[in-house]
Picture 1 (cartoon, protein in one colour):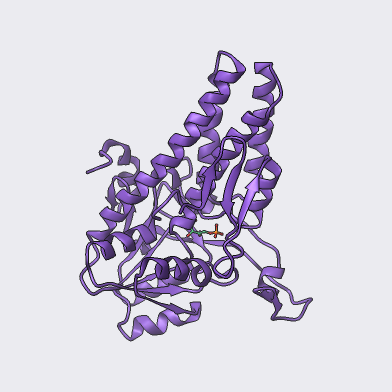
Picture 2 (cartoon, rainbow, N blue to C red):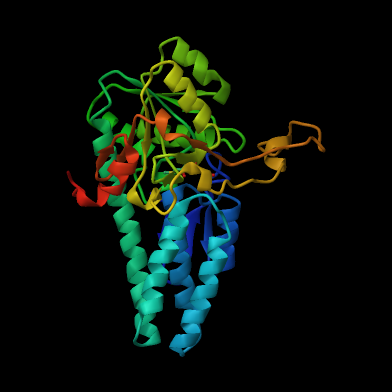
Length: 347
Ligand code: MRU
């Protein structure tokens, strides 16, 4: 099972807000339905957002009634702007839109050929992501030792990617290689991606895990129960500063204090060399209700003052290595990330 499918005249995606209690699929027959699914996190996770954005462009092209190339290009530009407005932090969404728009802008030919070219690029983006996740998993597994306990935060599994996952890809590869690992999954308040999605994915795969509340990580580290931390990323700046789900920074600080290696796992589509540092990353702020309520049940005064940033930035000094499909990048990241394209994918 994958979290999102391209069906030529519509998109199907699993509604992640309902997991794990209910497995329900959303049929997106138009771009606004997809946009709403992105905004409410029915589809989420940086690489999956890139795939969804590309599929959104392919859907807009497929559904367009125009026979005029100029008109189709104008419509696609508007669709791109709309999809770009749904969530600001994960760079993969913008990366995929740029990739499609590059084709649109330079295209000369018939309307049908442009539609076909966009669909082809969308499929390439999807398949590429699956392959990258597998490669990330295999590279990451090289640093995982037999018997280790690994802490992860949020969900960076198949539900967040084309398949296999990034952080969970590392965990999956280590598990499939027969290393007797154990995973600790932070529940990841406020929206519980760790409890609802990561725990569910690990359970489905038979990977031993223990779910903990976010505020327990430090105590476990102090007790010597964690050997390594690995999380995904939403955007990595040229210097290695990494935006990921809120709470990742706290885990990284804790890991540093306890001398535990802290890794980020992400494909090249998450690396934003256009920005020098994490200072430039736009952090999405979400509705107060997500904090005032716990899974639909009010858990704070209805008028409680709330601050709800969805992501934080972990400074590069706290990151042991960035696991990519081209190998593990080590500090200084300004050099290793800039030179990444020079290494072969299967190195
Ligand atoms: O708000 P979300 O659920 O989209 O946040 C997701 C994360 O922070 C993930 O860790 C990140 O996108 C990496 S997914 C491979």
